[in-house]
Image 1 (cartoon, rainbow, N blue to C red):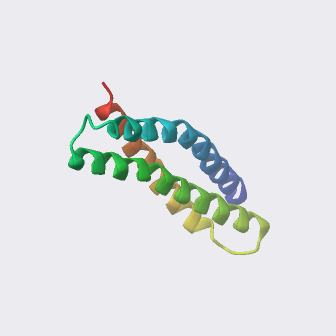
Image 2 (cartoon, rainbow, N blue to C red):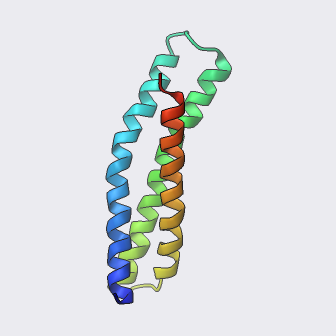
Length: 106
């Protein structure tokens, strides 16, 4: 597999993760809405809000990764290495979101 093929795969993965994040966002926002009913302490509510912002932050990394990859594929910039590093970061951010979602449900 050549470098270009690898980069195409990485860009595809970044866009696939963006789609996955669309599933996470409502889950986290729903937790914040439930916390607004006064059933949680102010400290717990702040944590819910911080948690809900983790999803958009991950979306930003995914979008930046996809953009860097596409710009590299077009030959505009040489950001292939940056895109690869961002993909590794993105994968672990999604893992963290999944762990948080599972740990806080129920």
